[in-house]
Length: 172
Image 1 (cartoon, rainbow, N blue to C red):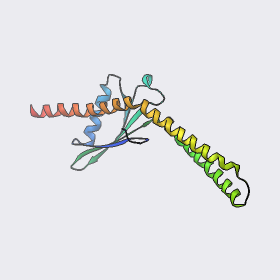
Image 2 (cartoon, rainbow, N blue to C red; image 1 turned 90 degrees about the vertical axis):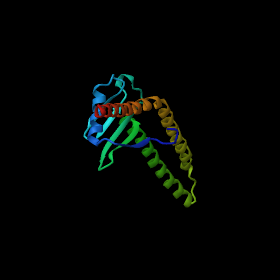
Image 3 (cartoon, rainbow, N blue to C red; image 1 turned 30 degrees about the horizontal axis):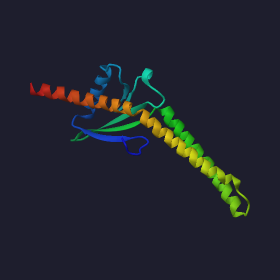
């Protein structure tokens, strides 16, 4: 996760069916020691850090499990902040973009009419604010990196451990 991604994604093919994958993750959540919590809704699972351990930048892992005919299940994962944090950043970027658009239209209209356009000085300020928001998001991603690994390790352990037990039962 060293690439420049705001919300890292992954895909993973699993040889079990979608229902089996969902069942394995549900069982793991029920038997969890409390280090990871989550919710299961049909073919969508959200894994989270417990509330008492969360900080502002704590990530969550959203999993969508799809059944692929003869190939087992396709697991699509998306790491991201809680929806309130994500919504705040979307709102700030959208507001900044809309304000910049109106300032640019007004300023360039004034310039085309031969008037002075001091409002255009707001554009570099908006760019600095946007860069600052981006850097805050990247800093938050770094703060949540260990928790991202914890969520991924929980998912991997649930699927691999259950798969190993199932193969042992088949051999016996």
